[in-house]
Length: 307
Image (tube, rainbow, N blue to C red; front, side, top):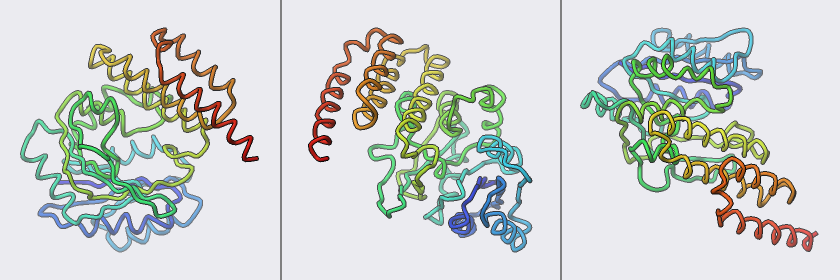
């Protein structure tokens, strides 16, 4: 009925908790696990192999002698999934509710128009600080997904046949500029099926430094946020006639300028602002850009005084 896909790389400290959180699930259907181990340099492979030895009928290991990268590892594991439904779990995340998979499959079985189901998650950083995501309501519309993805990877269960359709129609491997794999998939689901939410925290997403989505390097942080906005604009153009292009572009630029208001030089801020205005002249009238510039000047003066 369901396959849990766990992609992992250098998750020696976390992988056991991820796998155990799947094994603890209480369901009235069978659940198998595909672990994609991407040639880790720590003890992750040994942990995965030990679980395969203990649960040979339930856990299947996909590994190779060279690192294939996040996207290829993700794809080969989904291709190996045998269940009608697929749940996704990164090797450093874990489920917290024993009825998570049962609750989600029940929602999907009840309505064939529903392509995916997600839940709330708890984000925990390396200092132990915790927040609930999404912070507001659990969105279920295409437009809301364009504005901000509410579905963390570790919370989703989706129909496998639709995942395969997504790969054949969108061909994400032809978009190396997309720096994440989950948002393009969920946007496709939002455009081509219904998606629903369970308003409960049922999984934990670890916020680790130097991950793709939480890198402390401000340049890489901006590049990742730019990629998210560009993905949304691609889908808005393809499935929504570009109706939200200006809103999404405005959000893209304001996010970058907000980061640059704390980081980098004044010249870098101005170059980014002017480049956005050239892309869309309407951004010249973006009041927030001028306010953030004033904040940058004040921030710079405060830092000089502090030093």
